[in-house]
Amino acid sequence: MKNIFLYSVFILAFSATTFAQETIKVQDKYTAHNKGKFFISWGGNRDSYSKSDINFRGKDYNFTLENAVAHDKPKGWHVDYLNPARMTIPQTNFRMGYFINDHYSIAIGWDHMKYVLTQVQTVNVTGEINFPITEPGAVYNGIYNHNSTVMTQDFMMFEHTDGLNYVNTEFSRHDDVSALFKIKNTDKIQINLTEGVGVGLLYPKTNATLLGKTRYDDFNVSGFGTSLKAGVNITFYKHFYIQGELKGGYINMQDIRTTQSTADSASQEFFFFQSIIAFGGIFKI
Image (tube, rainbow, N blue to C red):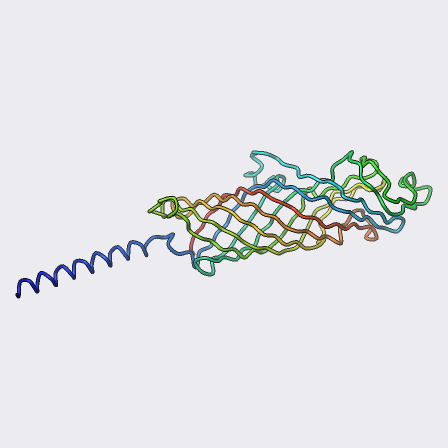
């Protein structure tokens, strides 16, 4: 009986030790928990925009382009994404954040999109232009009532190309789905799903030439935006990741600078859609 008792105690002790070691191994995985980690990423985007009504107003005019079409200005795969002196030229995304617990993070970021009013499109114009006869824009004087007008460069060039800057904060959820792909060692490779909501300010640098006026190109806080996103994150060797995202949102800009005069401005609201690929790192301090 004594031998049986000692043998039973040995088996129980061995089983408890093995279980504890396995538990420690799981807990020791860097990727098992996110709380307290920081992350930072840099990437690029492609953008599309809904049609929008754009109102232009000043001392001698107040008119609206109806259902105007715009597009982005992609750079493609280019070394400028890595060149510190030129990395704001392409359409880029920067994000830096912190995990407040294992599943949720808060981040600040900058979505550098580009918005170009499509040239030589025909849009309906409603409103009034009434320049003094000596002004170059006087050739467009008149009352417009849904008049079809071609967007030539002489009439107008209107772009947020340096850029349509959405400076925002995001609150996101992250879920490890590595098990679905039968990945056991997530410290080597880990797959996560992420979803988030964002809100922020629009700080565009608008490049505009309007009705013969001098070209204007400067930064101005113009409005606000909101967004929703969903994406897939693949982390390699605990610290390096690539993330693909789809992001959609709403932008409302009621104070867009268009000329050297503060009396001139524009306003518009529209929906946007981004596809993003970003590369980043995740770490603890």
